[in-house]
Length: 241
Ligand SMILES: Cc1cc2nc3c(=O)[nH]c(=O)nc-3n(C[C@H](O)[C@H](O)[C@H](O)COP(=O)(O)O)c2cc1C
Image 1 (cartoon, rainbow, N blue to C red):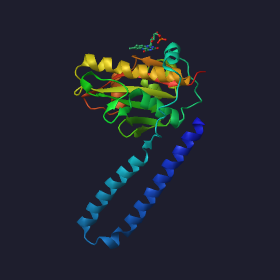
Image 2: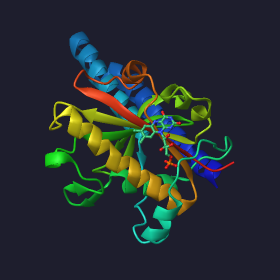
Image 3: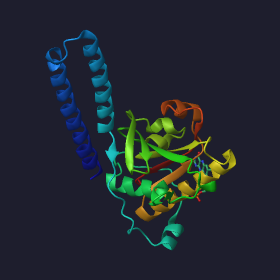
């Protein structure tokens, strides 16, 4: 199921890319006849390249299915089953529906302008990135969408312990400290999101461990974070062995 979801998704991305590539080639081949002036031709080429790059990058974003807000174990049962586990199946990825539910539970919008986790003074300075088998993504909570940051498997780069690369998903907590009330509150705000993930995992029978051990600078570079943003926490999630 998990593999199928990934394959279906990849197929969609590939066909999108092929479609846009063909449009690009056709427009390029016709450009000689359309534009006689050299400067106009160069300018149009540059504009076209920029548009194509944007289209190509957005074609690699993933619109998550709407989260299921009704299911799950009763709260008291989830609380009694909440725990840290450091073992993950290497061969099983989270289906897109589970990923969608997890991210929404973690830090999604449950009201038009507010989220499942509180933040001091409602600054909403905390955003999530995820490292999965096929890439690094930014979770655009407002649109419930994954935006591709980088292709490739960077799961093991998100921590220092051996199991980190086995987890199907590593969540990276990024705080915009220029938005936060203070570093103190920014760190506290991370705790709520982490506990949301813990409870979701308890409810879904997934393993998870929140991690303070990671290379902050390496992760910051990997995500191309500006100087006002910082990785404050990480959390691994996956299926039990
Ligand atoms: C802020 C914080 C940082 C943590 N960092 C790590 C870590 O880097 N690596 C790890 O294996 N566990 C880490 N843990 C998990 C704790 O070791 C774990 O929560 C603790 O042993 C209690 O177990 P429990 O979560 O099952 O109650 C961290 C927990 C917290 C709250």
